[in-house]
Length: 57
Image (cartoon, rainbow, N blue to C red):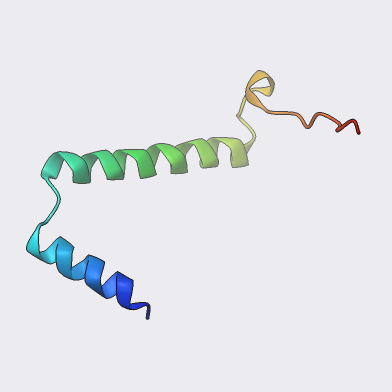
């Protein structure tokens, strides 16, 4: 395990994030999972899908 992660965990234990930040992080994770699920199920609209543009040299 990387020692930097241990340092980060100890800092989080000493100075835990606020409830608002925890809610924000979980909301972002939930939104990301919801968008991924919608796309995986095939309900994502065509206009919101990026298409590759051929590179010109």
